[in-house]
Length: 100
Image (cartoon, rainbow, N blue to C red; front, top):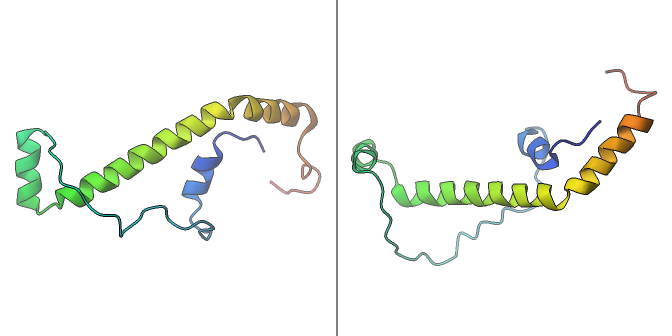
């Protein structure tokens, strides 16, 4: 099995139990800030009853996680390439026993 993106695989494995606690600190104090967004989006969000603060927090958390994954992939690019080269040349330990 080649490694493409270990974080991507873990994120979409719905049957895996969380081994690590969530990093979000729900007790962290909130701070007021100003943001500028398109007027039509703001109007539509208000009409739909969207909680802007919660939506922005979720979007920021997802963006930061994406940046962390990208940084991890870049930092480990050489090791992943070396592992994939090894697997291409030698296979994996389970090649003789797996049924897929």
